[in-house]
Image (tube, rainbow, N blue to C red; front, side):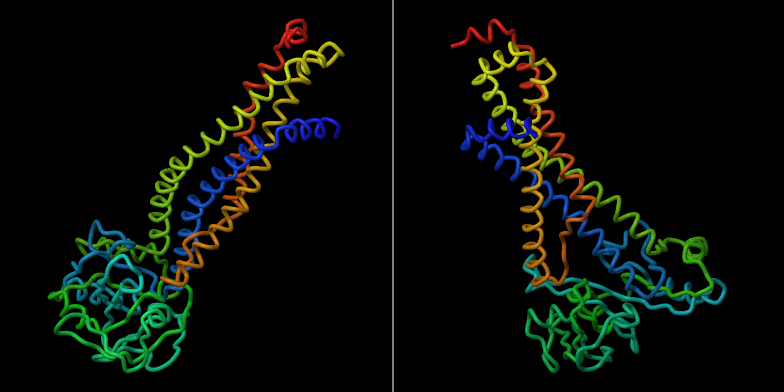
Length: 379
């Protein structure tokens, strides 16, 4: 306790410099927490969305991933081939879909239209979704809108949606807000989407299977029997998304590493200046019997204390910024894009501790190697 009190006294003796150094660590740690929280948020959001999807397998054109399906490329004969092998593979339901997005970067003016066959509705794709009002299926010329997009664009029953100059639909149903991606979807007849895109093809085909069948085996059977398609299970999508998120995590960590290096240099500068200003003090301590290890540990503890306190405050600031981001994205697109998990919090604190230790090593080494006579002779 006496050592901690001595460290606190030394830092408090130069309050402005210590506070500015501390702020540098706080900002650098908070930026790292916020950047990396996007990856954690994407993992949680994707996992939650996939757990709500009813069909077990997603059939896509070969070389296309589930998170970016793109332009419809699955031909009608592909649908017929899947239907022809359905009984053999244990497939119970086949739902072709066509999807396109309209609008810009502003969420309030963007729409994601998912076309469904006659008689199908959003609940066939997302069993946990609930209807707020109106019809649960789009019908022949209707649209069922997600709760978030309905709220942002004031879409109520009877309102008109224009998909193109030649295709208009009436809002026949409004879904409850879920806080997920379905809040930003508009479910419409598949023929309407195909008419807008001037194609008879499908973006994807959703496949439900018998409860006694394994999704991986059915997906493998589909790829063997039907050429030119990818059959992806929820596990496949999660694995691909995890790889993509990890790459983006490395990029974001690289960006935040610049701020961390700056914070480390601030700590090193503060502690080194403190060492130079206290050379006579260290010389006196050595003359009174203090060992080199004690001096080394004392100076290193100052840097470590700055790192730990700055890391904790940075974590709090980063979590507050994450909450602000989620408030905005939840209001605009209905998805929480940021999440400060226990893993992320632990990693951030560990980085702050290592930062303090690395920044304090050189000043501590310098202080511990001072010669007693020379130190006492300094003015």
